[in-house]
Image 1: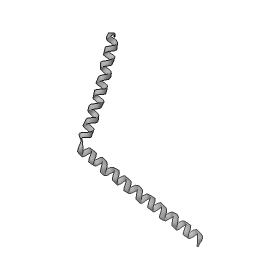
Image 2: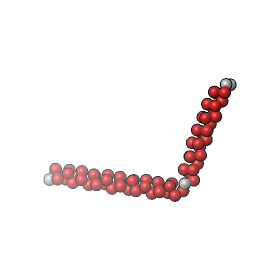
Image 3: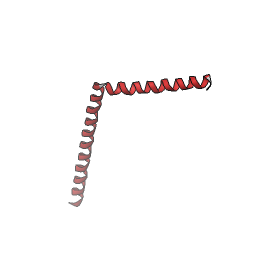
Image 4: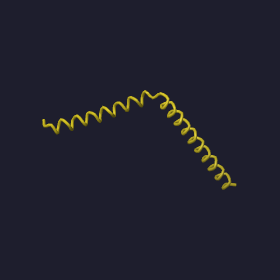
Length: 67
């Protein structure tokens, strides 16, 4: 194995280690994970309201069309 190969292998290992440390830090950031969960729940709630509103509008349009 040449010096260039070893240096490339070391650099790849450092990158992989950095990604692993970042992933572990993200998992340990409880506050951020909780905020993400709240945000996701809010987004689902908003999407649910939008779907319900679209269904009501659709039903009203159908009812009006048949009248």
